[in-house]
Image (cartoon, rainbow, N blue to C red; front, side, top):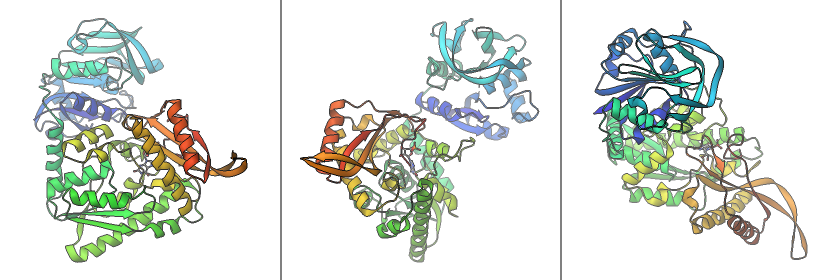
Length: 515
Ligand code: XMP
């Protein structure tokens, strides 16, 4: 199978390169920068991309390719595209000069194509790109041609099959980024572009078979698209006998969600589906707890404990479990700080944490995919549409949408409001356009007037966002008339609430969830 190898030097955008290449229907693999040659050359490699990274090539500690890989690349038999740090490394290896820029170039920059070339084929001479680096190539390698400049700065060069760009074509802010990658794949590497979502499914199934040749898989599933798709892929790979699904009703789910999930899994052909009603335990574990991270920690630990207990009971009957199936997708790993990136831990994500505590071997079939890719895959393998397009729902559930201390009464209020919000969005045909939309029960009461009576009741905040991957998000500009309808239905139908607010902050600086 034809493929593009991406050697990762630690940029926060490396995964986006892989994603863009997938969108262009070419298979790609991300490997660490110091991967040995035999692993890199395994298969039909059409081209290599050297990613960006935070370092400076002239520093002794800077990440370098293995000697044998460097020699292989420099033979020039295969096209190489260096991006940002990769561009500088390539220039340096080919005899050019890299220096610290007088001022770093970060963010938007205007560039001009000064030499016609396949990399920029069909594109206008002036374009806007996205930069993020302090170094630049001050002298291109001997015999290389400069392809583009930004003022005085060299931003692209070429020498035979070696191409370097200082900017990030994989980032959306680069106006013609997709076209540049397209040119690299098809004009330069001569890829065929025949890779499809179905091939991803096949590859994932093949990988699962190899990772789990024998032994049973335990998986906690919630009925959401990520866990359901992961479970289905594992079932497709290993058969229905080897996977046990456990649905834990924490009490923080939406109305009748746990039962619905169990029904659906049975319908999808899962043989072992176990429902655990742990609503009381979770609620009492959170008594008096107000701090969001404390809530997450308690929920996560209890969840793991319950799962663990269930695993040992099931093991008596079916034999020990060897693997833990997980619905983790790529953005989950970035946000929890478990990718190569040194991202600050903003929130402890439930599903990643308990896998860490577990001694079982993780099976995470979706770990490299973005949400929209998971949805496409889910649809392809026959998961019901209702699940495919359901909004993401956090592991700790409504417990982090009831701000402050959680109680059954507050959960009940929130469930009623939640149903109204979802109903109205669906009626307006806007549900699928949004990444998420949900109400949050604020820990304050406010004064209102109903009939001629003074009221003193809860306030609700509505959060609705559009986003591509939840790493950034914008608040949704919902029509006033819809907001008015939602607001008035809530205060009329849920008697414990007398005020509804709309959240108008983006992420960053706010996060999507309130806790
Ligand atoms: P934030 O609030 O960090 O959320 O902007 C980003 C996305 O992640 C979801 N989220 C979670 N998902 N376990 C999950 O599985 C969690 O603990 C968790 N916390 C937040 C959130 O709903 C949004 O889609």
